[in-house]
Length: 151
Image (cartoon, rainbow, N blue to C red; front, side, top):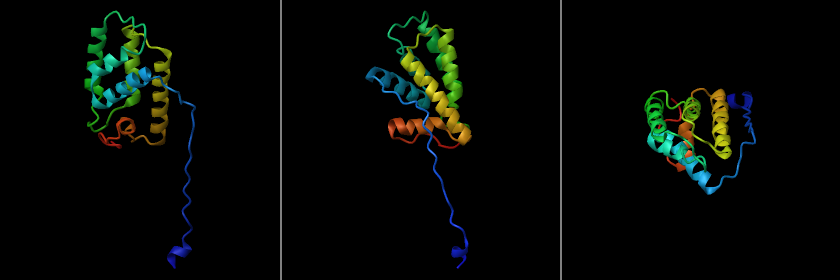
């Protein structure tokens, strides 16, 4: 009888479309998705190598210095097993700052994807500040669970 007296719970699912879909060429898909996988894996060396391929006319004057800076950044901020997880927004913005500092050329398709990741991470963390977005990305990209979805 108690169940009949309790009003039904009405759940609602809201889907938001930010229009961030883009068809990727095989080259862009390979280097961008590999870069995201490197973030989840904490591999700054490979991430730098992929990022240096984000332009068909790379003009970075010191790729080794850029790679070392990426390794240092990843050593501090890209450990998916640390208590707080990986702050993907912080990492993406720091990577873009390093690319700017080291004059790494980035083609528009990659720049658009990088900004889209920051927008999506911002939306996800606004909805749930405890979500660990690299874990969601790793699962979406590889089908494997890596780390914890929540810190």
